Amino acid sequence: MRRILCLSLAGFLMACTPPLPRLVVFQAPQVAPAIRKLAPDMEHTLGASLSTEVAGSQTLCRMVTDLGRECDLLLLADAELYKSLAASQVRWRVEFAHDEMVLGLGIRARRVDEAERDWASVVALPDIVLARVNEDLGPVGYRTLLLWRLWELQGHPGFFDRLKSRDMRLAEHAEQLAAWLKSGDAEYAFLYRTTCQAHEIRYLRLPPEVNLGSPGQAYDRAEVNFTAWSGGRKTIRTVRGRLITCGAAIPVQAPHPALAATALRYIFKEHLEAFSEMGFTVIAPRFYGPQEDHQIAAPWTEWGGEF
Image (cartoon, rainbow, N blue to C red; front, side):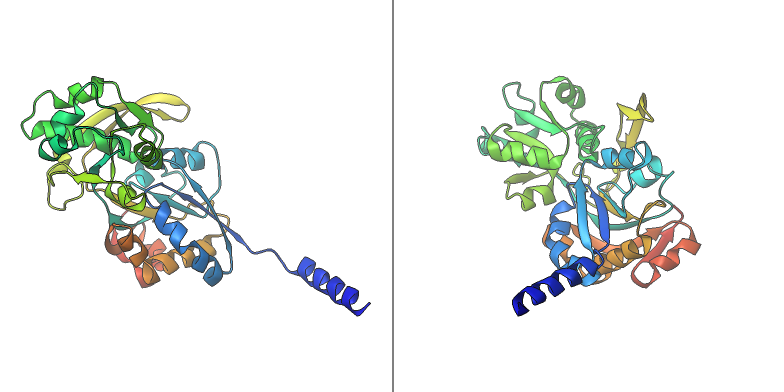
């Protein structure tokens, strides 16, 4: 009888315990490995459960703006997208890390020795199974196009059109590319160095003039246009080259803005090294937005300018 009473009391107490708040995080595949690593301790420290959803950065922006999906944190692979695609739901952003583009090698990749000497010639071969991300779904997709354009501007006329017109596999995001490389469904793919490191994929470093990851390079001389979906209709979007920069923001409709701010403090003031360990080039977090909003992040960010 005593045991029954104890079990009943335990059940009653559990039933009376309020559920933990749920912190919803929409995140780009590029940053997902670092967040996964932090998640257990983060949940314990915040006293909250973490619910994450991974998709290409443009897709995440559309989920928030076009579909009305709510999230507490929006982590994107291109910090410029907060202003260009999500400005209706985001007032500010924090930039915190850089990355670079590389050429990933699949487990069945042919001509690797040749690619180490002349990667551009190998990826242009029609019998090589090449893959990239759809430029309208993830920034790594249009960054791939910018990489090609930059290489063309380095004195290789026709390179962009040659690759743009050839057959290749199109992925929805970088982690799908990684899966294709590991399964042998693609021989080569353009993706982030951090993605390769997270998935233990061999890769070739690309020249700093084209890899979009080397400060001081004139990446903005490259420009590409592509068809994109916006507000349920097709538009032509123009993107210029820029140093790869990841960002974070709390949407204006976030269900738990105070908890989200605490989560950002946890990540960027106390555990930013998790991104360093994943291969990112970490920078001092910089806040871009109205100065009156900076107080939410002032203890752990510098004010970088207007949104």
